[in-house]
Length: 214
Ligand code: GRF
Image 1 (cartoon, rainbow, N blue to C red):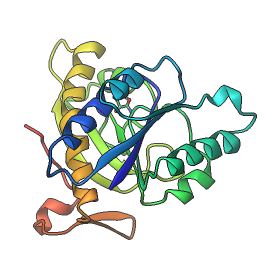
Image 2: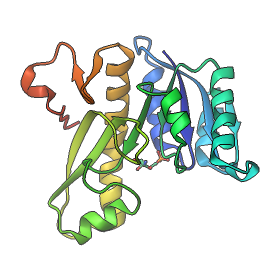
Image 3: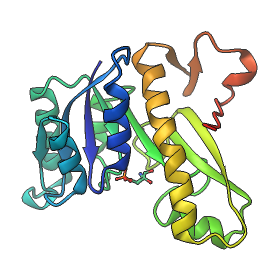
Image 4: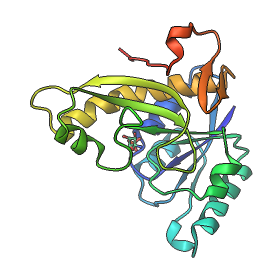
């Protein structure tokens, strides 16, 4: 499966996907990395791996729809059949989401539907949660919503700061995203009534799939 990755920043999840795709039996390859920021660290990560990159700045387009159309064109030109958003910080238009419906994943650093949006780790600490985690889900029009492919739980430890907690969650993200992409690229996921059903999994593992990557 030919994948385009959308980024805005450092690109550590992108790196985990690149590394996974390097395995000969991995069922996906990254054909382009699109960033809305020219200084995104992930662009260097992509270039170092010999992957085509495109910078499409949202500031160059008067409307969200025109920006999204430019991204869509870059993805299509590169032959992408599927999108992985990995730290892409723009809200997508309904039209773009519909075009790529069931063909776009996102990773979010919480156990959705808890803690959608920004400043996740601050809010997890503020709430006194004992457990947090990360989620890979299919993208829908509402932010951080959509059928869940996989989740990993991560403990919140005494004395955690935003830095220590986000680092622990990020480690889990780097295992979870390749695992989720593999399942989808193998054609093992089906969306039924807006829930992901994974073939060849036991019933108890499906509701929703919780994958501690330890
Ligand atoms: C990750 O925590 C991801 O879950 C969130 O944004 C962050 C991106 O980090 N959506 P990176 O650019 O992949 O290092």
